[in-house]
Length: 324
Image 1 (cartoon, helix red, strand yellow):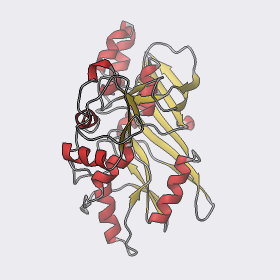
Image 2 (spheres, rainbow, N blue to C red; image 1 turned 180 degrees about the vertical axis):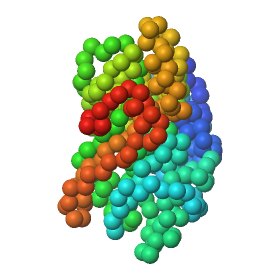
Image 3 (cartoon, rainbow, N blue to C red; image 1 turned 135 degrees about the vertical axis):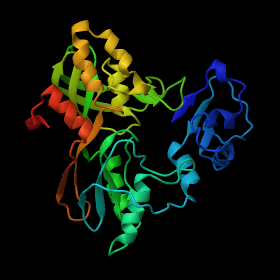
Image 4 (cartoon, rainbow, N blue to C red; image 1 turned 45 degrees about the vertical axis):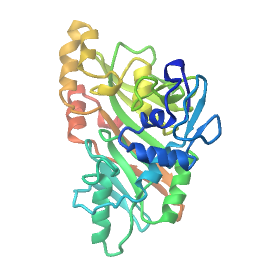
């Protein structure tokens, strides 16, 4: 990602500025990343103590920073229930529940999906070291795939990078009656200027991102919607929906909290409240994933069952399962 320094950050140390984007990493780790060249100022290496100037362009290799800081992190095998959708000698697909973090980090070394996968791998007849190919937000449920070898990881990760993976999500949003029942949200996404943990539509420095949507049902300010991802930016669906005025319900970070109900017509509020009460997390589920198997060339099509909160909401909304 590239950040252009505005007047308010001029004069700040480089390491302190970068630290804002990785609040769960230590400052020492950020300084090491700067020394290794994972952070550049105007395409050049600078010291950690470099004082920023207005209009400086800071290039941060986010993946490298995180990779360097997790490389020596030992994953502790931990018995965690796994809902396995599909598995072969190369890959394993899990229906991840909401509230489960995907990958351990310095600030959380246990209780993650990967800890559970390590335990499962240790108990398998043919032991393997699981490697996550992609990620889901902690509070997003649905399909996530791990590889069983470096080679398998590399081949499927390449398909993700080349956008050869079909990804379909379902979400429940809130807002006024839509102008269109389907469409394309194609807005670049970058870091939020005020909150480094958030993303936002950013036409200056954002990376291109496309989300197709189709509203399957609309009632009393509630949208039951399907999404197809053509890119995989962090928080992409959540950011795009919020930007277009129909945030995912119970998404506290992007404006989908219960306060939104106040903006609906009074007669719509009781129904909307029933749907909100189904969820303790953002109402987003990674439902389908399809790809050509890198080794067998077979077409793999995976579907993750809806969790209980979605099932309850679907029953209230009255959506036919034929659409899902």
